Image (tube, rainbow, N blue to C red; front, side):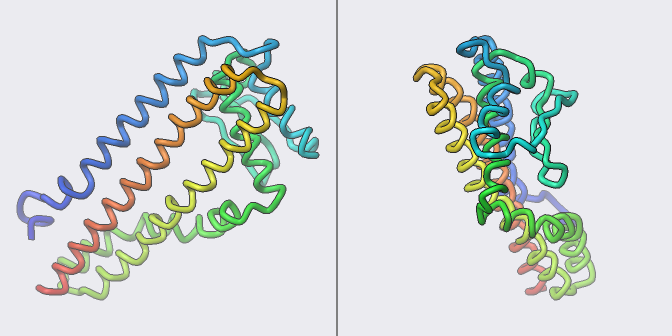
Length: 231
């Protein structure tokens, strides 16, 4: 069993390519954001302005917008009903900042209209967290103890993490689509909207990479669990 004694070729075959893709996706989103941070937004619109505009147009005047420390720490907190924008987005007058802020406002709109995928993703977060923590130890324990039942449970639990990443794709793509439509309706010029779209597409690739990594790990665990069963 190479997972324990020798060279782990399952990692090289199933996981490493996805990790390389994920590293490239992270580099790409950072470089794309940096590029379009240098492109001024129309009418001096900041990230805050863009998010506030979309929220108010959708009747979400009660959703607050706060600035938080860090870079690319932007997110919507549905429990607190607040959009938190990073220092590189909140008060920055660039198409990159506008695009990212509009995307987070898109998430707020998703919750407001009851968008099904985001409700499902939220519901399975606890299971996903448990599955991600216990999957690998259970599979390893199943191999060591020659207990395929334990390894099988580990694989099933990690399946929740794959499901989470799969559901995340339509959630993120839909939020970006809502952002682009909202920016177009706001009167922003075509070139600026295209530039904001490039930032959002680069960000979307990181979620594709996360799904690829999850699938790679799942296939690896499945193979190892089957090997444990045969042994």
